[in-house]
Image (cartoon, rainbow, N blue to C red; front, side):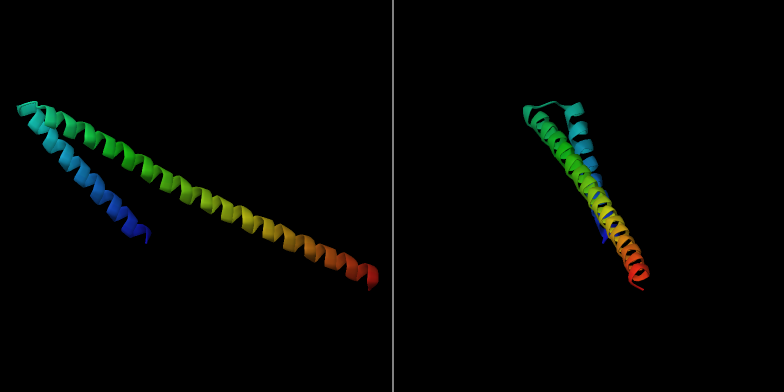
Length: 93
């Protein structure tokens, strides 16, 4: 799944780069209000997508850290239970 997500992200960045280069070439030829609006729109889309991608990456990182923390807590609890059991066995044994 991760490879597909990476390919999708690469594809959208390529598309955005392609569109922005076309708009820039047209603006260089003849600047118009519509081209300026298109340029501003592409900039907002790029910014939005960058933030969205970054948020997804940070979410996945946080989720992984939470899972690791949970697993460490479970391991500590099991270890404490084992020690408690051994102590109770020795006292009662």
